[in-house]
Length: 217
Image 1: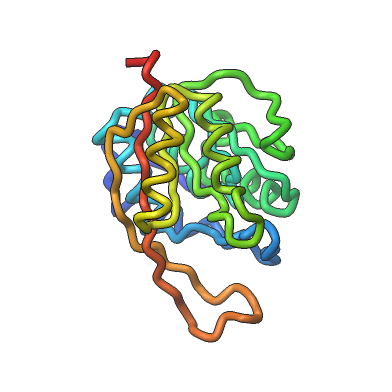
Image 2: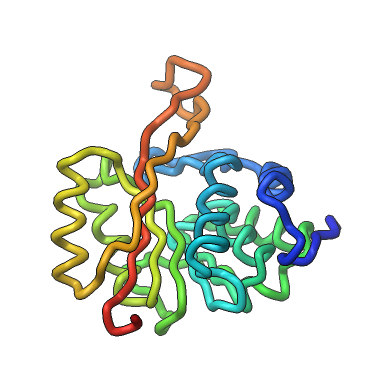
């Protein structure tokens, strides 16, 4: 078992090193747009949520589409009181469970095998998610965002970085009685994972939206 530091003394570089130990999905399915978030981006997102917006420490957190669990486990490391990882792929969740135990946060985490549209979870404090971008199944990113908006006070959600997507998301969030506290543009590293990939790595710009539900101000 890896001995982790208390969240009060954890540094972002140390968090990145721990998250690197969690493997990528060994058999990703393109229909689900399964891309394991790189450890640099995962640690950056978690650090913003934790240090800038106080969205993790002592909070009940959920990771929608958690994959192998980098965001879920990272939130537990940073002091979340309880973290739920949700995914409909059993192979992903088996890895997430294994590494939550190896890293030493199994008592703080639960993993649920389900489609998010049928999520048996009530209201929590925070959602942190890296949803599908809706490339293979159009609108799937919006499905994830709508679920997140219905399940938490504060949402940290990653989406395609372009003006069309941003305008649409701003309108949707405002309609759902939320407001955007910040948008951070990140460069996510995607390694070659599928047969159609021709380069060793791809760098993709994505926006991290920090959303607050108005009733929770």
